[in-house]
Image 1: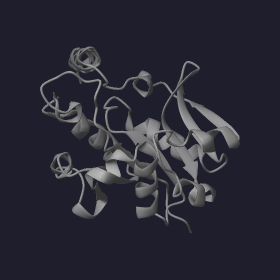
Image 2: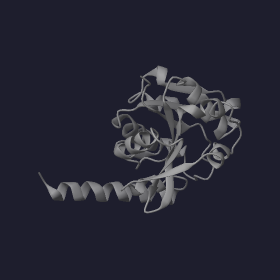
Image 3: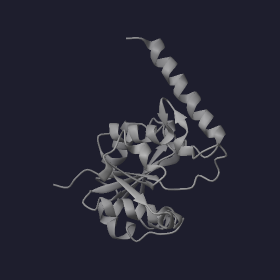
Length: 206
């Protein structure tokens, strides 16, 4: 029996649009960091998780992932673009039944959303999460696409594969599938969203 799909968290980009003092993935968030919150949700899905990142960012994963689940790219490899990161993550978990590609700067994507996309891969070759008809992340690929995924390179990512196969939009009640942290304004939006959710949860009581 094949394994469940693996979540490939992609965190090797430069984050050049973010104008803060440091890397966007290292920005503090809910007692952790942007990347830490993304990894927390991924791990809580109870799917296998592998992180593709750089030497500078890798230490952030230590609270959530074993060292064997962190793929560290060299600066040269990281500069090759998103496609190379995807290929590295898929190759590292070649025995999985599929792969969910989750950007490391999406800390609001819920564990149940990841499970829903993984489940849909049982009947569709390519699945993406969508909220109210709007396309988001993660994007999942079934095991049959392994040979194409490991050949990816450049900044285009997996777009060419998505264009060639039937794609299923998995509707989820999770606006976080549309929210990434590209700018300081994005980060503030995420912080406000999480604080509002915390207040609402406390107000609901036991």
